[in-house]
Length: 139
Length: 139
Image 1: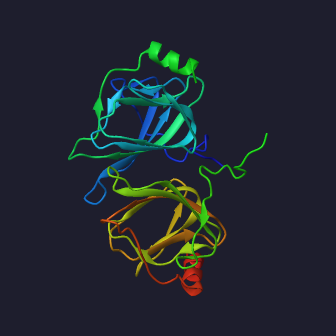
Image 2: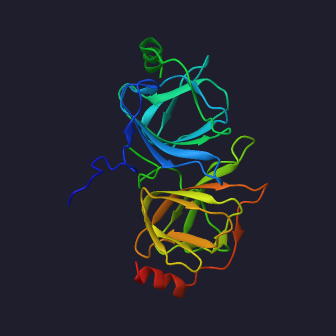
């Protein structure tokens, strides 16, 4: 028997996330587009160990459902929260934050991203190696 | 090492679904409540083999993300569609339908249910054994 899914992932890996928005190797797969009924899009995101999103905000918030691995969610000015398989994170609008894998573990999550008109994210600066190192030391 | 999750499920099983709305054994776990930002609730539903929802409608639709097993999604008057792990189903508003497990396999899905004011579902009649038998014979 052959399989295209050797890691038993739920979804296809999708496309590599842009280095403009992510540090390290991240895979982004769209699952559902916003439409006239659903005022959100749904995607699957896999962060390889050490990978993370830039700091960013969402105009109408986002919900993460972690389906595998371990990582972090951090709001600006607060300690990072360790997150793991089975966790659900309700991210408020306009709050600067990042999420990503732990240094030694991948993180896979579904993201449900609300829209405000056609806007859903504002990308900011990268999470620096120094910021990321501190988070991984204090978990 | 002990675990509370012997089947490696993503989420806790939750509560047994009411026999008023389901046939067979179904487990429903709330993951996120509707709030002032998210105009939807999120829940996890596990249908044991042979179990299924009653026919029902959603005033603003629902999105299913299948995370394990195999089953069916059927809209009234149309053939049932086999569904399986990794599938995403975008259910339109006001369309009478049911979903549930195959006779010989469980079905686990995340459900993202949009609200219209405080309404999100209208329950109708049970899927009869005769209706269910036909679906399982023709898959």
